[in-house]
Length: 233
Image 1: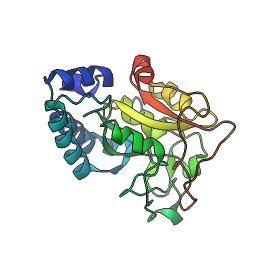
Image 2 (image 1 turned 135 degrees about the vertical axis):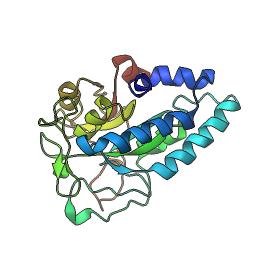
Image 3 (image 1 turned 30 degrees about the vertical axis):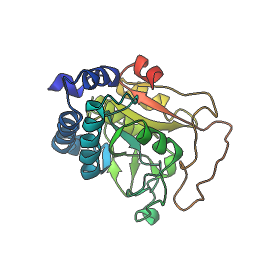
């Protein structure tokens, strides 16, 4: 089962499509792994277990009917800074610890529509503005390869979750290395896509209107345990 935790999203997708693995089995395995081991790493700081189990069961029903959506049944986590209805979005700011967005970010809408099973959200530095992943809301995320070291930031919780075998796929963001540096520090992969290719609506500080906006540098992109998975997504 350790191999299952470290399988790539592409391999897991093939197993789900072949019905040699169920989405419920996969989700339960990763939920159990997070609950057993994440107290060391503190990567998945917001968990959405009940909705993940429901989404996995629905994915199995859809797979049995021949549904071929690209992320159907694939568990994943997302960076805490993305708006997800029903979950807090704080950007690590204590004053915003009780903020819950009214709508999903555009990327969250898309991955849900593609059939992904969201297990929870991963840690960030305060206001996404540091080369470590620490804040006073969720505490410090440690590098799973050496718990005394940092996974970097700002997608540090994302990279640590991947390297810990908690998720095969992650959604992060980057303005000055926030995808690339954590991936490097944790031995995983990230893709910094062309500006404008992935929508950024809903990746905003708490309380700011969720409107389309452009930035000279900021992008949203995938993180995974293989380069081919980043391209596949």
